[in-house]
Picture 1: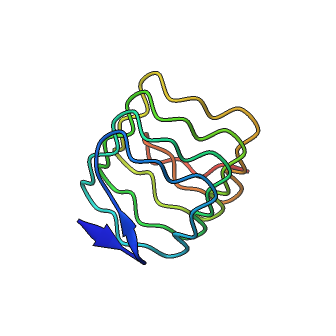
Picture 2: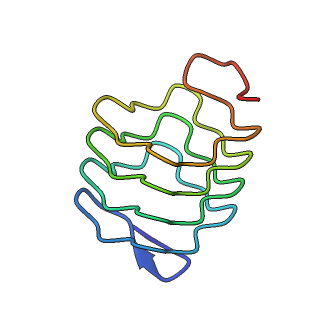
Length: 91
């Protein structure tokens, strides 16, 4: 699948990708490299982000509801206002 000119697939190299507002429902981004990616307002409902590298990613107001973040690296990620997998909203 292609979104905003980026190939969305397992292991994708999406360093610094601009995926603002992208509709990534149920996307398989297992092991994807999303280092410093802009995912502001992205719809990641039920996305598989197992083992994804989200270091420094901007997930402000992203919808991660029911997303699989098992083993994902979120070090330094901005989750302000993001809907988390359990349905809560990050402060």
